[in-house]
Length: 189
Image (tube, rainbow, N blue to C red):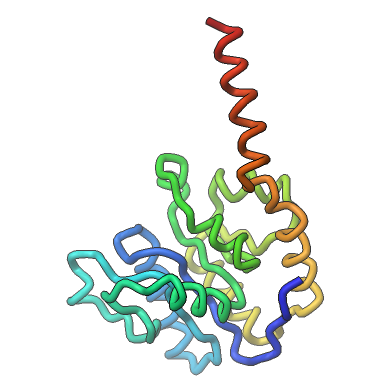
């Protein structure tokens, strides 16, 4: 079990790049909470790479940068997250392969996420791995509530659920699934 963060404020992190739809929402949520005087912190394990980034205000995510991170910098930032934010819209996540969910599991970071079939399917298997939100307002409200009254025991249980189930993404487990798919294809020719 990873060490539970005892620090305040709670840090919400985004895995990925700004060109992926969803980082703009992270920036809006961060700006809204900062304007309210929230102690929430926001971070990015990734980099800015959208053509319009120069005209956007990402000041509420202070470490957002166009510079590529080294592997060590990426891992250091990710370890400091308390929660991983997943703000990709539901219609997109079904069409695009993404490692951001796997990164959240790898670094044992419970999610605060917009409802979508990908995360919902794995949450049904893994159990309580975070907070499902219907829209940006609910996501903002959940982030706000986590900062105001951090649920340490639920966080501990979410981390335990991630640790107990993430083995399904290990190469040996994926190999078994892949073998079955190939065998089924051969049988159905």
